[in-house]
Image (cartoon, rainbow, N blue to C red; front, side):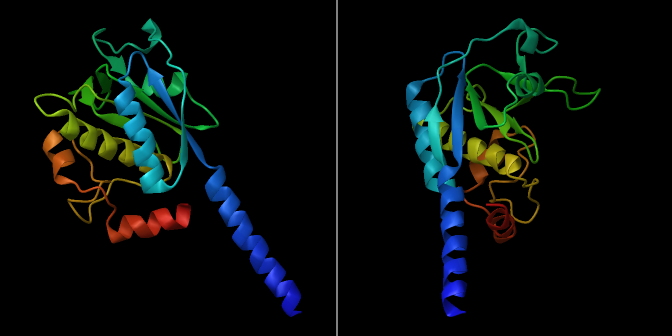
Length: 194
């Protein structure tokens, strides 16, 4: 009986290890994206979530994902076009927008990820204005980890203003205020999901 219990325990531990190791997030550049940013994201995702990352070959922009202004790209159209059964983080340097309401039909955003899905999109466009490259990379890391958090099933956090899962509400000040961590509530939720 003890041998069976030990064998079952080993099977559970091994399957947990295999599941964690088999999770890959594909980083998909949309248009030209700085290679340093892509490499930084790859390392950041691995360090924070423990997931391996593969940087894919860039894909080009097409008119079918333009927002109504025709000067930005619609994040929800990007997600619909590049929906995948794989875990995909789409990265672009172009400005992206989202239909928030009739008052704000084209709301500029940092990123978009839906719960629970496998594809999210982020943009460096609004993150790099009037800051050093290192500051931009830190912002990029927070936004990417936030959107992946949505894909894993997390909602916006209202427990702690420094939690990465807070809604930025379009303000870079909120992104800067956040730390690269999850509050205890979000951490508990994410540990159950992973």
